[in-house]
Image 1 (cartoon, one colour):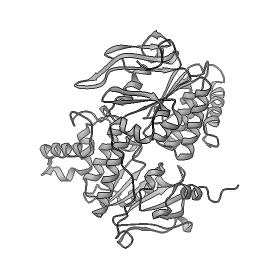
Image 2 (cartoon, helix red, strand yellow; image 1 turned 90 degrees about the vertical axis):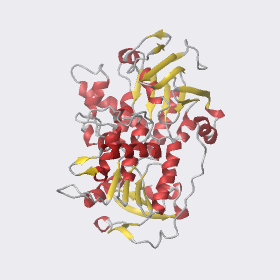
Image 3 (tube, rainbow, N blue to C red; image 1 turned 90 degrees about the horizontal axis):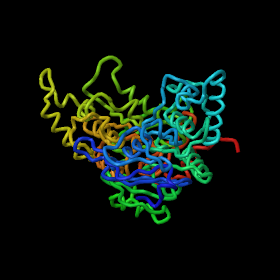
Image 4 (cartoon, helix red, strand yellow; image 1 turned 180 degrees about the vertical axis):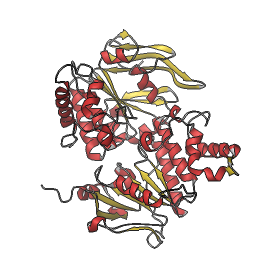
Length: 485
């Protein structure tokens, strides 16, 4: 059992077991969160973090064990919400065809009667202003028209606001995965204020700096079990990674000697004659940086659209695309893991007018091993995987094909540190063999691994950084260049 007693806990679970076929998602877990406590929950993809979230928020009934809310046994989403439990999901739960105000009403049934839209608008606007000052989001905009970062901000703000009473426990599952560094720091500052005021937070993040700087206690999970629970002050990044079962590897830039002289595979003029022109050479890893929503994703989509046939599908694919918003642009939710992987390379399995299923299956098993996709059967539904494992499938889809240029739109969202290190090494090996990567990331540590970096502001490239000049200070300075003091 956790250090928190059952009577002090907002939520506690005892000897909880959850199984999906032969997979033990939770294997006799004891876990508790006390009032005024920020608990960091870490572990590799498939460790059981999302399952424990779904048990706590009432969305999943355990096969064994019990759940206590404020010392009373209960179950179900209604019970969890009645005890002040709110959850910001890694896969966002907003309805894209409704406005921000209407989504607020869906989450808070207390907003009813005449004038509810006005009340809802004021509540969500105040919440956004408190957490993300200067956000610029129109609360009457349709959610589908917002960027993924803005959608994430809205979902966070909805769950922190209180209509009849404030939330007691807010679960944040990878809350900064689509936010740039500035927005992420605003959120972490609000979490610290919320906890200081007596609220509780369960924070799940693969950005270990956020966990260490915000949590009062850190719980490490592995293979469906809690392997350690200690005060955050007792951990460093290295010891936390080692507790998760990974070896800490130093991330160093190793630029190819030929990178500066290799042929250009992309060469574009400056946007509308302003800023810096864009190019990429064979074998380069080119980073796109700057504040979120300033043209990085738009550039990637433009490049991919220009390389694709307007009318007929082509077997000669020049570019592959790894989406960060996998639910919207990446996975086919009704398909199996194998079909989601192989769809990008069907020509390799073609046999006359059909698909060689044996070759397709062998291909799937090969990439399952290469990417470490955690599943007993590649024919399982793609949604049976954790978010990070779904992202591994998208990487495998892109890398398994013949495309010589790979576009990556913040692809490491929800991916654990061990997998990140493996992917970094894979990207470098592929670049050494002549494949070009164009990589947008909201994480400075990832951008620093690139050979060259373009910094965006207001839709144009305002700076080009190379080698040792690729630093957080330089990126931030150029991101805010031109702003009034």
